[in-house]
Length: 416
Image 1 (tube, rainbow, N blue to C red):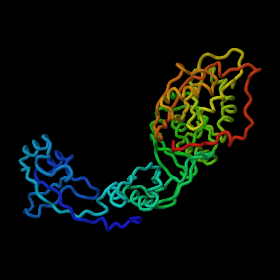
Image 2 (tube, rainbow, N blue to C red; image 1 turned 90 degrees about the vertical axis):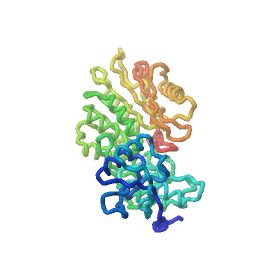
Image 3 (tube, rainbow, N blue to C red; image 1 turned 90 degrees about the horizontal axis):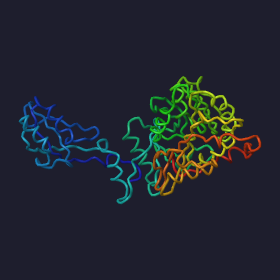
């Protein structure tokens, strides 16, 4: 089946049932909650047609209960205490497409032995899938099933290519539903709105966004080098931090500004549309001298895992000061991918090479998530060494003249 025929799934099945007096019905249901039938749109209790009205039938899951001996000790004890006989009755049910789970529908229609894909990332009303080549013949059917079985999903899309652009977006095709790519959603109590087809968003990073933001205190300053639509910047501003947020993608920049207004933090967030290196060697460089003299912490967030480690060299000799400051140096949270057996060592080694300074025993590592087989996303956290940040006027590094889009070209093989 390559196009969905819902009528083909209609069938009659026989399930076990318990005959229970109405007076103890709710108590018995509560005691047997793990053994009752659990199907979308299907009742667990039906009338007992062989009785005058004092009894009901509780329908049981045939995969769990096939005989009275299948009840757990606690369930059997509860039935005895309510004086309900453990005798099983048979009840016929009409099972339709609406009563099936998405996995059951797909298992029934895809060729035997093929992977069944029902997993997706939810972005507001959009379900985002990554179908494999052998599933593409059934893409329209899969999209329709996902939309039918998940309330609130009105659009199902499939990623057509890897993320391979300056702006971290990717081509996608609509498998089912409306072609409306402007999503609205909440993450950790913050509302975001954006065109999913033109910006980067990954709902799987909500825990990581929250983890880093919780390290920020009121009065701190946050420089978000690759801010996207604001999942670090806006919550940090809501915490009372001063935020400078940057993204090279004009669409991300536009939606970042929109989301700042949507969450009423536009007065606390300064936004920029620059290459990451230009942002560090421009606004960050301008703001740091005064911040280093204060008592509040400074955080630099660099969430571009495919390339962020390579941007650390932008901090070399960034500031010139006769007597380098030893206190209140910025804390960097830099993300990177690793395919090595020891990702911690790999990320620290690459960060050290880019900084031109050894970070071993001077940083902490956090595992974020596995994004693909043998590919981990890591976050390295460290204080920028004064030996890196400060330089004499003789060796201060000048910003690169290479065009910004070329410097920040992204070649990611998986959604981050």
